Length: 295
Image (cartoon, rainbow, N blue to C red; front, side, top):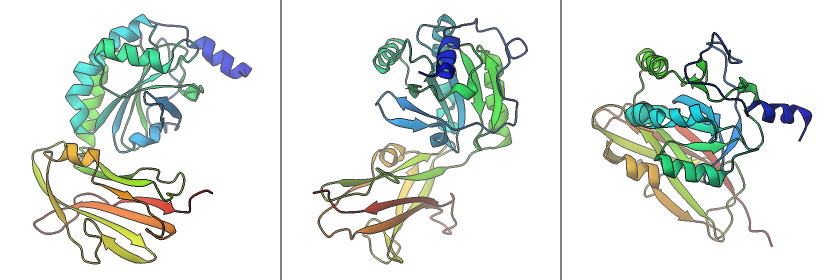
């Protein structure tokens, strides 16, 4: 561990009471600063980044399992913030910044004991160092454009909820549709793999009939899901009734020898009005590739 990382690790052993605020213990950011991206490990041992939450309001709790004020805050974050606002384009993200004392297994046990359902992660490589105030918990609220809008050493429930309501009012969110292809932008699909297609969908308002258009571009020609013909065949859904289906999996395509052909593919997905065909969301674009199996 470098001396810089050692210093950061040492800083994370400090803790404060939840009532302390910015005026006494400032955070490294001002309102309006761009939030630096970082990558940490979630409870499934997958690498996740702050940028993965782009388009959502992020209430980011930098905490540790051994911190008393942190433990006092998690129940409020779960019940009064996550459960209240999660369907309105907000995510609560608990990032444990104490890998010197915590493990993923320990965090999992803690989450089960506390009944936590919001996403949790462990900063195993101290990548959150730019956010360090020297104390836990430290709270940030980041808007849908990736801008820091609130920072606080400790946790003030009233102030956090007030800022959430302010952001929801100034930038009301409509339905969103983000196409997801597993293994995207990582390694080519090879024979024996399955290309799993799903969508991350939100709908904060009332029930909404939509048409889903999904197309894949192969060698400058477009083919449309679900029949993969050259004709557009929209699939009707009603949101939010279909959210579970869409967030789980739309289709799983087996990669076989010779099909799909070796090359790069671009997928497009959009929600449209079934009445006039107008787009309800901007197109979601994902790129992937198909290669050959390693001997």
